[in-house]
Length: 482
Image (cartoon, rainbow, N blue to C red; front, side, top):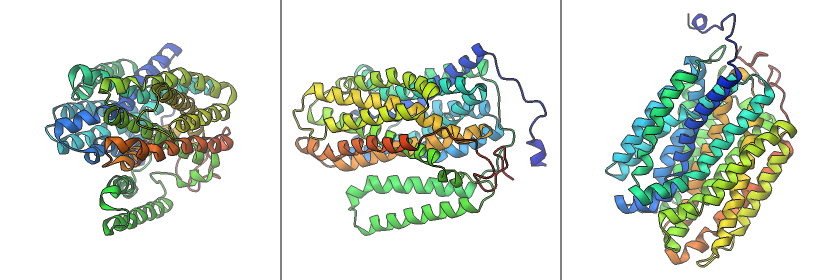
């Protein structure tokens, strides 16, 4: 009965005209801007949140990572639900949940309530990120037009990530830290209206069954990894609690792999990771977001704690990063459409590596021009990276599985964001202002290492053939399960 109700229609709807296609892209990009901004906008406000709620750096890490961990955990299942129930329907539900959770964040009286509300925000955001890309891919049947659209989509998402601290600094200076959540409400209302007007309903020709065991194990794995990284400096890396955490991470990872390999319709097609372009694109997305979030958190805490800058000043210091990402992301999309992903990935590696190296000798009185140059280089690298990584990952999966394609890459990004925050916070937790610069230096080496890894991704990136039953066991030639 269920299979009959989900059968593909005999005559699929024709794609929308050009003006409507780009209107759809604009609406999805607006919603994606929300997701990206909320991944980073809170960073610049962490000292003010800590002062307002009387908590230290350790507790503040969870304000950021509660959002990113839940977002990363649920992206794949949200993409699958959108393919099954309808992408516009899930997209609108995500906007509503995100908006209500933003209200709860703005009104939170304590750290616990704020962290819980941020987790609910992550649930809403998980229904936006992969679904937005799936809607765009579905509306753009021409490969070249789709590549340009993905470039625009990636540039907006990249801009939102880099612009978050600037926006947050300005809002906090004018209205206090709660305003970084209030601002979401009118944007969500506008997005809901635009979705109703412009975005058509779409779903996969054949939806997959939900993989609840896989979803539970994936959520547990991501939460455990991030939890160990955040709590490790406090409890001690060799303490019994830490050793128990390592054992649980190993058990969750092993269980996830075993469950996914045995299911006919898994949450993640692990066989896809045997294909170098797809596997390296996913790892590259993780590395890029580790670098970005390490940079943003270390920048915020260094400038405010060590240099005594205000939130507005420290947010403004990331403006070169936002400018670099904004200018280079569309350029990167154009390069991908004309030349393929390798050249923009090489550029991303060069600039990210150089930006991290600029601050590996960071001190209490490092010159401001050098700090701004590092931010510019990292922003340029980030701008060049997103479009080729997204394009390579999506090209490695069948178009009928666009929701899952976007979800896997977006999961990698958010895992990278959560890990970056946890690692950066662990490096400087409990450090006094005079020792902060020295304690943060390994973080800048990590940023450079992430940039170097992009050269590996560039070497492996080639236009991937469509997935067939020969590539992934248990798949038919159109990418659906058999």
